[in-house]
Length: 510
Ligand code: KIV
Ligand code: ZN
Image 1 (spheres, rainbow, N blue to C red):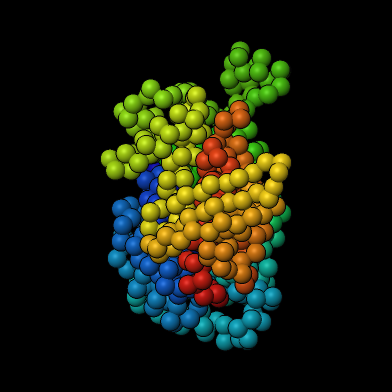
Image 2: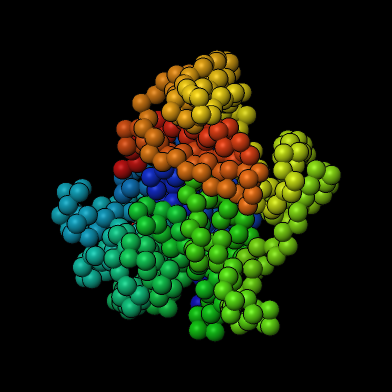
């Protein structure tokens, strides 16, 4: 494979994705996702914005130190102290990368209040400073697609001369269209001295629903790095979805002859995990990883599928790691069967974790005749999401509900190791439970969303509850699953509060 055939995959789920309001991930969740990205074969992981908070710094440092293959990158503004902090965080990684950016469009230039010449000087100074620390420098002219062509060329030339090795062209507000996205990269390759020595990257937002098309068009124009996120997570309408570009390049390799290093059979599992930890459920009809992406409901489609799968399928479910069998497990299934089933689903659990999951699986199997793949995934996700190290934990809950109110919730929480109990009433069992949480852990956060999804069919199905809360413009999402909807609700609420505690530590990134 030549350099020309290879497209690098730069994943920014943990930076741009996590910037999406409500998508905050805990430290442990970030480490886990980074590990999955590395195992999947992503080339570069943008792990966070180290200057933004102590939490971000710690997450980027640990990810850099623990990642085996991928380059780990941190983001920094065009400011020396950001760049220094970023270097401190990534420097222990394998081939670490500093990514520094400044807004170059007329709309963004006004913010640092620099003249165009002063901005050129700033780009030169900050990129040179970064290059003196690290040989692997990525530079981004933020809002590149709304920047005047001549000025964009000047900024890119300056960054290359100062030592940038990757130039990323962000479509920050999702404004470009495919033909233009390709033309910008072609134009830069033609006009900027030294452009053939570096790699151009494309970073597209999905405001007009064209992020994937724009990224692939940029590759046709000469870009060789795609920036993307799992499930297209990201600010506003999100970023280019990693699973979409990887599968598009694979399925249409005849017209887009480029390779990535991503093992596509890991896509489904990482998609599910990111959906759980971010609290952003994947829409049913989402390309590649949506629940209906491989479902054939209509009679004509089913008939065609029975005769030959390629009548209606351009890829097979197993290509993305979606196992066709949905082997049902029951209360007589043993630990070895559970371990092997979880392995098929992408979870290779250690002995201790398997022990905990097995106990919960047995409890579930006692309550529920058949345990499906989705039940197991919900159970493992819940085990990972609600950790024994959380500040606040649900210890017990008894609820009285029915036609003769008031509905009452008797709740015991452990807060930083100390158990505390309260009985509250409310308008329904969930309201009573939430009132009890508020009494035990007073806070001003407002409930923005309360959502219940049945994991499988039947009245004995587990419920996945999502709770989104807002406090001083900080938004967090909590989740939990249980066959008892009220227990799942209490745990999801507490999960959101734990995330809020993490978020309170963070200062505004820019
Ligand atoms: O969208 C954007 O412009 C960004 C930059 C920081 C690269 O995320
Ligand atoms: Zn972005």
